[in-house]
Every structure is written in structure tokens, then in C-alpha cells.
Length: 191
Ligand code: PAN
Ligand code: ZN
Image 1 (spheres, rainbow, N blue to C red):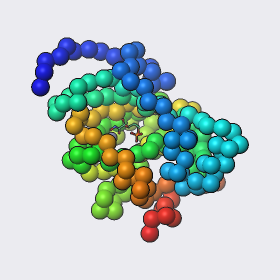
Image 2: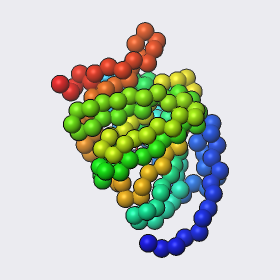
Image 3: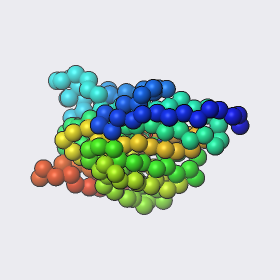
């Protein structure tokens, strides 16, 4: 563990932009078409409209060392693929015992969570919501509003990200538009 200097980052609540991002990640529809429940709709959208930005992450660069506290913003653009709202890929932490805090900055979203033993939870997030992802819970965020959904995340550096389990198995709960409203439904691909 090394000493390092304290620093401050200015965060734009509406856009999620950081004053000095250490990294920026953009996830487009082509990066995650197979994660949408209606993959055919995702492929059709790509063919008819071309690629689209689904979400962007801006974070501070920190050493990958125990005790460091990485933090970033995520901005999910509004929209749907078929009936399913724009969402993040979602992941378990590689070290399952590491939790995380999400803080809503603007817009409206859902935080979809599940454990490997079959429990599920979907909580609403708006500006000012501090949502806790306990250890062992996979997490995905979904923009259910008409404007950008932006939130701030804080976790422990050694948590690590396991995307593969969700890519293979998906989430048990989906957030779809039904009668114009965001509705949580069971994922038909998971019995
Ligand atoms: C968040 C997420 C961020 C993007 O910072 O990494 O919202 O979502 P995906 O990582 O699922 O693409 C977090 O949970 N960090 O651990
Ligand atoms: Zn996480």
C-alpha cells in the first residue's frame, strides 16, 4: 500500500461528466445485443438504425490495490430495445464478498439485483437515492425515464468484475415497458 495525494473531482449531475476522468468507457448496442431479451429486436435496430450509444462510464484512475476506493459515474441514455429499457451489462463482483454504493444524480432508473441462490430485488432510483448493493448480489441498472439516468458508484478496488456469469445466464428479472409503464417481469429464458 503506497501513499498518494488526496484529490477532488467535480461531477456534473446532469451528464455524469467528470472534470478530469481517468477513463471513459462507452457501451454501444453492438457490444451487448445478445443481452437484450428480444435479441432479434436488437439485431433489427442495428440493421435499420445503425449502432447506438447505450451508456457511458467516467471514472477516476486508481491503483488496483486493496483499500483503494474507485468511483465513477454512469449515464444511461433513454430508449428501449423492443420493450426492454436501455440498461447496463450488469455483473457480479469477482470477489463476491464486496458490496457497492450507488447514488442517483439525475433521471429515473431501476437497480436490478440477484444472488446466485435465486433471490431477486429491484429498487427504484431517482436523484438523491443512495442504493446499497450488498455483498453477493449481481447488479444492473436500467433507465426507465425519458431523459438520461445518471448515478455515482463507489466500490472497493479489489472487488473485480465478473461479467461472464451474467452474459451466460442473464438476470432473472427484466424491466419492460407494459401499457406505457416500466414493469418488472420474469425472464422467460430462466426457468
Ligand atoms: C458500476 C458499473 C457501471 C457500468 O460502476 O460498472 O455502472 O455497468 P457495467 O459494469 O455492468 O457495464 C459498478 O457496479 N462497479 O462495480
Ligand atoms: Zn459493481
